[in-house]
Amino acid sequence: MTPQTTPQPRTRVTPRDVFGRAGHPHGDRRTLQSPVDIPTDRAIPTRLPVLTFHHPPAAHTTLTLRYERPGSHQPSCQHPDRETTIGAEVAPQGARLDVGGVRHTFAGVHWHTPAEHLLNGTRFPLEQHAKYVADDGTRLVVAVLFREGEANPLLERLFRALPQPGAEAELREVDLAALFPATLGSYRYTGSLTTCPYTSPVHWIVLADPLTAADHQIELYRERFPDSNARPTQPLGPRHVRTDTK
Image (tube, rainbow, N blue to C red; front, side, top):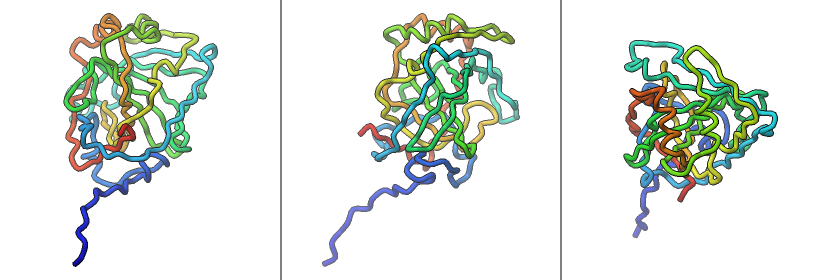
């Protein structure tokens, strides 16, 4: 008698090993949209490439804060007025993220309120997007969720310094490591930018462990975007979410 076998889920993805090398996935880019509601119970356990952050010394790191507006308000942009964020660029250059040996250069950081990604239907009050670009131009974003709790000293400095529209604010001696949790377990999938023109593909790494921010810190950012600057969640469809948290 032929032994019965249990069908195994397809584990081959492109790029191989879930962002352990740069490259563009195949598929209809119209379906590769972000953000999504991540079903953590259905995320596929995978031995994912290790994340290694490289941050310049705080004494030599300056962030420039300014408003970021979508570069193209196309007809598909349903809420262009809500897609403005306040982002920060770092000087000098040198911050980067290595994903399994693939180098990604830091390209800036910004925030959304409320959070754009959901975990099992739960929405957090704030989400941070750290943007990176690989040598071949592949985009990667590391998302950090914030829950209400203990005050975050760096967010206090950042959000107290938020500029007015059209202006800039400079913040010196910034410890970029304080923007990320100590534990780097994650959920990874391929999607898009969450602001117009929703360019895809973008490799998303949503860190599983949230940081905390005090109510008043979240409110400092929310005051700038009282109608929200978060894009609605998009269908996950047939895409797989991979995780190293299990």
